[in-house]
Length: 458
Image 1 (cartoon, one colour):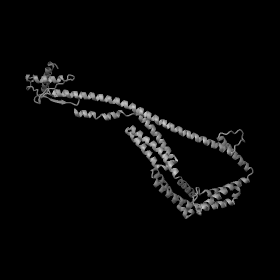
Image 2: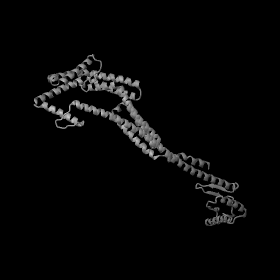
Image 3: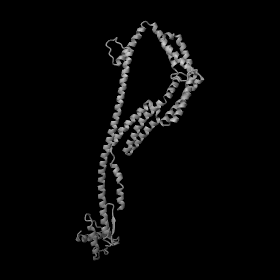
Image 4: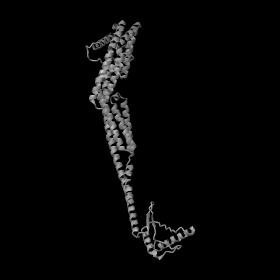
């Protein structure tokens, strides 16, 4: 009985755990997980993604942990992992802004190197062949900068940043002589197209940008140009615009056409800005349009700020509501589990009482007989078998010997302890003689015992 007691008791933690699974938590966690997955997707598609690959991996890891916890039915563990994932996303954006601000000069230098390389081909010179190599080395170092900075290894990130700066500077330095050469050719072509007269502003800007690039190439200026390809771009524009102006000059009314086109463009802009256009000839100056744009920009900035504040408030309210909901669910589930546990305890207590009662009854029966008189066996179905080894019949006889009356009286007393049970009596013979006769003999002996017990009050 002791072993059975402990076996039944060991089921309690399992049963209790199964009954305390809260279905509403699963729906709430699923909604949170879906929202965080959407935030992760937005982060991966944003410019900040390149700066925080480690942080993105961390978010994925937390989401994976949340899914594993959900599969195990660990709702608390799932919600904890989702909270960590949400914090990791906020941390990723913060780290990205930090890296972009800290290494803004490096990113600017990288853009300048790629701009310069865009106007140079490998066949231009032997030095030009090395430009893609320098760019590749610089890009690789930049990735290491982001990786180290994202892991909080600032010293390592600075070392990689130094390597990247050197590589991009080498690429720019290799491209500058070719840019100067191409710019000189474009300026010469622009001069031949009378760009000084047709496009005086663009042509002048091109020459100024060329002079600045020349000062850097000659070592007079140490600062790497922000836009090293600006001079050639402007020089090429001067050529194109000069050719276009020549075509316009050949056409009568071209100047009026340009004025009308500019007015239509200002009218379209005014219409988009919500300004009134009472007549087809109504017009607004660029100063008025620019003032309107700046006003809308200020208004948009204020709205954006207000929206950000509102979003933060909504997020805060949602977190509080979620915490309240979770607390309420926990309270409800705890009450439910307490009730279920009480029911299980009552059932267990009743079972224990029955087992104890049966154990006591069996011991009371054992105390009625001497050793060797009766064999007592408990069956799996709860029934009890009393094998009356002391009771013997004479060969071929069915009558009870008076010497067994006292013994059967004690059997009767034992059965009285089980007055809530049905009693089945089986008689047996040896294996000698005819089977049918033996069967009849067994039945008669069983009836003799039954008659004695009934007459004794059973």
